[in-house]
Length: 323
Length: 242
Figure 1 (cartoon, rainbow over the protein chains, first blue to last red):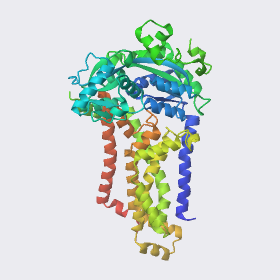
Figure 2: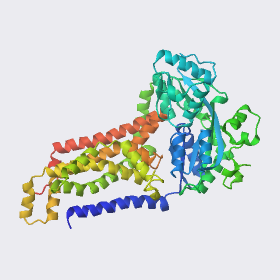
Figure 3: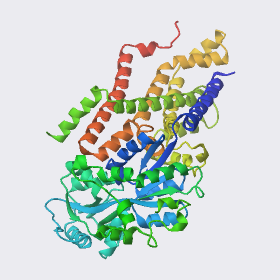
Figure 4: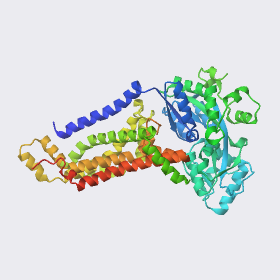
């Protein structure tokens, strides 16, 4: 046999060993994997690292977190590359449910988006509401041409929120994105905040990521609160009837843990030690109590579909999740 | 304290304190890139031998093909492999996406053209007289090609080291098909990117520590080659005594 043929056979064997090794390892030796596809804001704040740590101490499973924008996270789930999605874009979530890909949606947490900008506030948005602030930034940007607004420009929940705010301010985001004062990063929240910081421009961020990055930024949080800046995080399991090879039972266990008192406490307490305030508020108990707080009624009108967090036909025989 | 200085100080503390997370990342990086390079060498050697020793129609076309692929942008390859390995893709049923195996295969594919091109050049540079001599001395076809490979050992080793360097330093493939899952598929490059993005004092220190280690690995290997060449170790390596 010629030398090159021998090497070729060895090469084929070695390749098979690598592939088979990976498959055998993950099928028989490694702990079961639970693949969570998530938005960058939950990951960049470090919340999910804490969730993973806490969950793995009581459950014999390896939580694998893949971070991307909401749009990509949902796409990955549709392709069968995730068992669970953790996202924050009600309109995209509704499409995901009605197309049959998602089941057992639960609203797990909320906080607010914030419009951040240079401390000098050149566009004068202090004291304005979100849409008025965007109008001022646009007017100021058009007069100055240098970058005044930095956008995620991906399909993330934050970007979806930005688009809807421009719409309510009377502008089409696609049209104004070509103007010289408007910059797009196409990247994650922490990165986008850093770009805005370097360019001394305004941007919109979820409060959690902004607080987690605050020490490294000279940007100030200028416009806060109000229904239009509400940010609601939900979890959904990928529907095993629609997408093959998903770990549905493990996904349901994880969702049950997230909405349990333990899980909700991990979420609500996260960040208190480092940032002296919590980055997220648990949503499960106040929603269950139907508590008369203002932000709870905002969640109900912003993130509920047909007056429920998950219409009955998408509950996949898990009524215990919806007491 | 200045955040950058602070970051550098903390980075060196991380490196020298033997932080298990840092060294886990380093081990994974070296292991994935190492296995990828071995695979690529195994795929590449027979092809390089054919290209270097045989004459056939379209040979320059094949050589040009591999030379062109050297410049393959890593994210483009990462995207192609993501579509192939995804559950919805042609190799989806294997479930390789976001596993170490996917990174190893991806990096092996990435560096194969580089290894083939360097090895082919080295084999072509071997004096044809050597082959004739070996045949005259009664060597079989197979023994002759092994002898040529030994004679070209320099280029063969350089090709593989260049391949390893490209594999360990690339980001696109590891990020897109590995997913950067902490503790499973995160490597030096994906974590440098992740911790830089996350920012904060801890994030910055971690990113700097990992970048320093990556630079040490890559520069260390290249320095080793230069020194070995100086000492003429490589030039005599594998050459049969005459």
